[in-house]
Image (cartoon, rainbow, N blue to C red; front, side, top):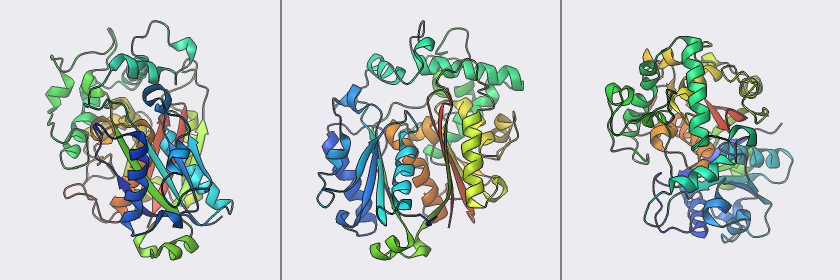
Length: 399
């Protein structure tokens, strides 16, 4: 297999893109990432664009055609990719596989979501319906907000099975908000929270579903944003004028999909997620012990805990403890979601998986914001999820 490298990363500030149109998002993301290495878009051979709500929220299909409208990209093999909240990771894999197949030596993976209107306002019911279609029909009845409800059930299961408390899981959100305070591109970078704020009920922190433990601060954000990577083979790096010393290798990757129906699956030991992560490690020749940077898909706080188990940094059932003990902090055993994660950085669905890899690229290159840079970063892991831990895309990165 050809070695595949990340040559550049670029993203918008996550939060509100206001009046920016979808064609403008496509143009800004591609031209922005190319500007990072002073490359013309015409140097890119292939590409993929990820978005999940483009039709339901933006009345726009065939987004690949919009990307092909960027000068220099016409007539290139570009595809639109949708895999629910794992769409961004899937776009990265799509471009990798094109390069592996010999369709080119350079490419891009871009993801975006426009979930708010031109004034930055969010229609909760509309967004809830748009995201709800990524669940199994049999698990929608009686649920006002489908995914918060499904993950509230997962959270309850995690708490009862592993004998942890809501307060212990609150440590995930507290640390991520603190990280976001230092990340200028994070949606919640001006919001400060204490453990009591997250663990206790208040006017701003209420239970989402009666009888289930999930609260407001346990949830990720409704977010506008875009993110883009340039990927290349060794030959492609040379064409782009990027040295291997200025690139990060995607040393391993894995993708797996479990049945969409949550009922009947062991969500505390997600088979697909574990299989995808295992493949990524095997391909990379690295182990969890080599990794000291990671981004995991914390769409809800329980997934921050469970994600640390999937990437192999915490033992089964001890993910919450990993966070409580400070092992996920910037100076801990493995800096996890130093970006702020989906909970505080933001969760623009199609961009999320791209941004996870992009953050790890910056960490490995020593380019993370002050206070969030891991000392001596060795290798990184990412875990991107779609649905109720259904679709999983995992990567392992190294210098």
